Picture (tube, rainbow, N blue to C red):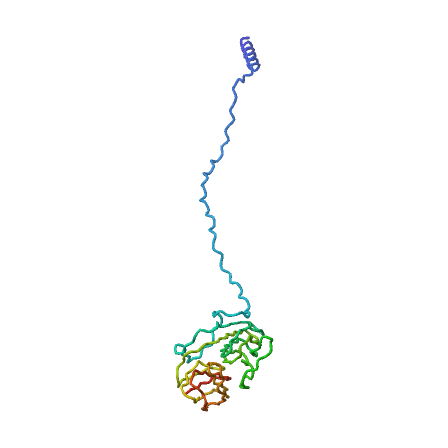
Length: 279
């Protein structure tokens, strides 16, 4: 009887507690979930921005040579091995005219004062190279003497490096060229005022206008050494007068009479190397 009464009391008490909203055992807090501790974040070192670098130089293709008036900075004139520049006095004259090109072409118009012109020509090719003087209308100018090169300034096969001395009237001229390679031209109007006396020696591998020399009397002898064939040479007074023309072979000595005192040079046309002693 006592047990039943106690059980009834307990049930009643449980009912009262549930009615009032209270749990007999209290709220269980959720079991915390174990998680691995986060790895510490290590700050990455700042990455340096690439330093802008200078652009690598890119070689621009060189333009094809074209004929242009020169200012003294273009192709240099061929030099004779024995040229004594320090002994040659040159006064003030017109500026040089220079031109370069490739293949067939013409130089710019050249304004020439009456008198002496020295024309230097060069060619870097394998086929025929021909240079002719033309006037402002395009008509070929016939040069003095038949010579090795006839009326042309130069005519050869392959490479060429030579010069010519011309005596021309005042006018406007051009040089017409036939070539398969690059070429260069330099036109000078020197005003020679002094030069070494005789004897003197001059030489070149082919066509050449020599440096001037001083003649004191009226006669000169020229002793020639020629590697092959003949040479044709004009004796020119630098004031603009062709005094004589001679043809010689190896070992010959040519005599030129009737010269007046003054400055002279040789305009030599040759296919091979030559050497001359003027006395």
